[in-house]
Length: 230
Image (tube, rainbow, N blue to C red; front, side):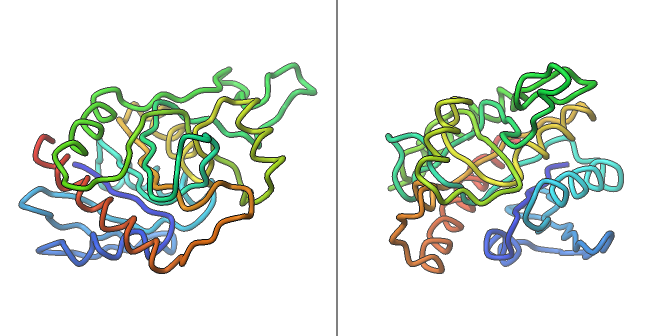
């Protein structure tokens, strides 16, 4: 079973409209939509913003719905100078940039007990996303790269430059690494797919409602293309 996750309602609304035979389930304040898109069964959920929300939601998807593939779709701030608004990053791996237990000898981003910093996305899902984008007319630039996550909205140029330099991240958001860690612990395949909303430096000049609509359209088209091969 495939799960499609998004942090904000705007990021999943088009997916819900495209679903057939929808059955709603609620748990932990979340609504899970079980149905089909193009005759393929999926679970769709708006998990909420932040790592805790994302981790809780991921565990419920695994425990209650038996998902074995997770696609997280949404927006992010670009850290790479080569990325523009609406360009898409597909995760190679994810790191929590705000996790720091250096006082106990751990490198920044490393999860104690696991002794692990980078959580790799499923290679087959990454390749499928990149390949699927080529079949969609006028799809924005799409690249694979590292996604950074933290419970902090990055809107400062110096902070963005610091994160890019320290962790070699392509973009930054607030959920992906939590989904990645939960998936890793449960041996579930995942990929994070993010559309760039800004440069993570507070200088964005974007009509956000219009942007989110465009990004959601692109995400739906990409996931539909991926579903043909899942």
